[in-house]
Length: 240
Image 1 (tube, rainbow, N blue to C red):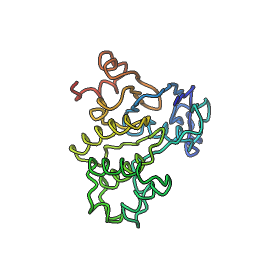
Image 2: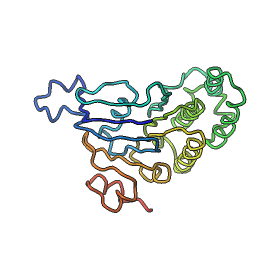
Image 3: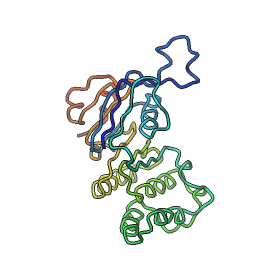
């Protein structure tokens, strides 16, 4: 699946009254393309990363420029940082995972992914029996990611997937995503500021700062010749 941004500008309605046009832009002349690779969009909070995700999903449209998704009609799933937006807080975890099987009506395929994911993501029987609203933020996040992986979309977009996890589950989640998405041909876009958990997962990196592309390429190229201060900052504590 090809995702292409062509000179994209975006101004939220609430910013349109600001006197300086330059200060209005959340995205400012963004151009890049991603094709059939595990990719990461990285940068500080407020840099424009999540806005790019929402444009990929078609939730918002650019004020100028174009966003191309080819071919059209592919299945796209997303897990935003607030996992309660994806999970019903009044229903149990297992009932929401079983919803996937109802959609596809294919018990065999469902069970093959289900057993692997719940074990590797630490989704215990106790977690599955609780209502989603009773779970911790990290447990809800893993449950939401598990649910979207079971759908086996063509493209999965994850917004800060490591944010609510401890160090153990950050490493575990990175490994599970790499193995499961690779085995099931799921294209992945991870949006995060935690570069250390992306280097073994993603092949292509886009660094965003102040609504612009500050750097892009594979991590070895960016490390060898970072083009921006934000790239240097993200790489500072990274050991490769």
